[in-house]
Amino acid sequence: MPLTDAYVADPRFERLGPEFADPVRPAAFPAHTVRFRNGRAAASVGLDALTDAEWLAYFARFGALPANQRQPLAMRYHGHQFGIYNPDLGDGRGFLFAQMREARTGRLLDLGTKGSGQTPWSRAGDGRLTLKGGVREVLATAMLEALGVPTSRSFCLIETGEALYRSDEPSPTRSAVLTRLSHSHIRFGSFQRHAALERPDLIEILLNHVVEAYYPGLADAQNRAAALLDAVVERSARLAARWMAAGFVHGVLNTDNMNINGESFDYGPYRFLPRNDPNFVAAYFDQTGLYSFGRQPETVFWNLRQLAGALTPVSETEPLAAALNGFAADYREALREAMLTRLGVSSRTEEADIELVNAAFRALADGSEALRWEPFFFDWFGGPASVARALAGPRAGLYSSEAFSNFRALLAGFDADRPERLENAYFASADPEELLYDGIEALWAAIADGDDWGPFEAKLAAIEAARLGWALATPASTDP
Image 1 (cartoon, helix red, strand yellow):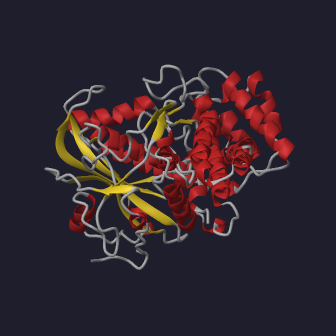
Image 2: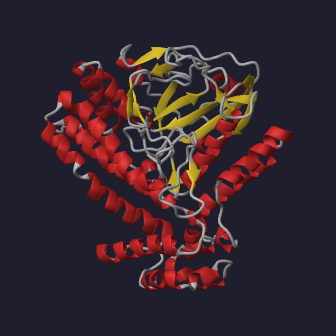
Image 3: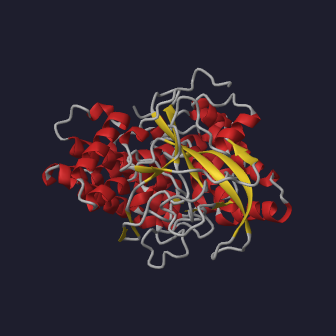
C-alpha cells in the first residue's frame, strides 16, 4: 500500500473503552462515486499516494487503515440543543474512523464521517447524508479555511447511489458519505454525558485523555480540569472572534457541536452574511434568533458554562469560575487580532487597534445597504496600501460617504502587514470570492438538474485562489 512517511497512526480514543463509544458497522452503499478528494489534506497525514481503489476501500467501505483503529466507533455524548438538555444524543450518522498525526505539527487528527449509516444513536433516523448537505459542507470548510477560521477540513465526499427522503427539502434526493479531518471530535457534550450519569470516574478518564492527547502542556497542572477549561475558553473565544470577522453564522451552536480544541465543525444550515446584520440567522427553525450572528459570542460563553458545570464533579468551583471569567478579555483580544488580520494591517497599540476595529464595525453598520460584508474587507485589505484600489473600484461611491470618513482616517495610521500579498492576482479582481446562499443554491441546481459538477469544481478552485491570495494564518493548524 503506497503510504508515505508522513502517515503516523495513533488510535488513542479506542483505548478509552466501551463507556465512551460503540463499535459499529458502516453502511453498504450501492454505488461509490468520488465527488471531492482533498489532496492537500491527504498529504498532511500521508494518505495522498493512495490509489483510486484504495481510496474507495477506505473512504467508501471504511476498511481499517494500517495500524489504526480496528473498527469504527460511534461516540457517546449528550448536549444542550437550543438551550434544552438532550440525553438522547451520540453519533447517529457518523463515527470516528481513524486517528493519526499531522505531518507538519505532530498534532493528533481524527478522520470522522457523516452519513456513514445507522448507529445505536440514530434515534430512528436513516443515518444518511444528502448529497446537497455534503456539497454545502465541502464549500463551508473550504471558505472558512480561506478566511483563517479554525475548522475541520472536508477530506472526501462520495456519492452513494441511494434516494433519500427529507421533510424539509425536495425528495427523493441524492445521498453521500462525507469524511472530515478534524483536530478532535470530543465535544462539550462528551463531558456532559458523564456528568449527567453521575460518573466522575469517567469524567476523570476523559479529562486525562484530552490533556494527554491534545494539551500535553497541562499535564503537570495542579488542577487539570480548571487548566483545561481555561485553555478551551481561550480557544473558543478565538473561534467566536474568527466567525465574527468572517461574517459567518454557524446556525446550530449546540453544546454537542462545539469541541474541546476550539475548532469549528459540523455544518448544517450555516450562512455567510450578505451584509452586516446582528440579527441574521442561518436556520429557518431558529425562530427566536438564539443563534443569530450577533449572539454567537454570548452563546459560546453559555456553552462554556455548561462545560464548566460538567467538570465540577472533579474540580472545585472557584478555579472553574476563574477560567470562565477570562472569556470576555480573551474574546476582546481575539476579535482585535481577527479584525486586523482580515484588514491586512499590523497592530499599533491596543488603544489604536480597538479604535480601528470599532470604526470598521460602525462603517459596516452605517454604510449603505448595497455594501456586502466580504467586499468591504477585500477592498481595504492592506490598509493604506489599498486606498487607491478601494477608491477606484466598484464601491468607491460608498466609501466616499460620511459613514466611512472616520474609518478611512484611522486606517491611514496603520501599516500593511505583508503588503506583497496585494501583488497576488486575486486582488486584481473587482470583486472577492463570496459564498452566499443564492450562489450555493445555483451550484446545487447545476448538479441536481444536469449532473453538472463544473460550477462546483470552479467554485472550489476560486476559493483556493482566495486562500492563497489572503494567505491568512489558521490558528488551529499552528497551535502546539
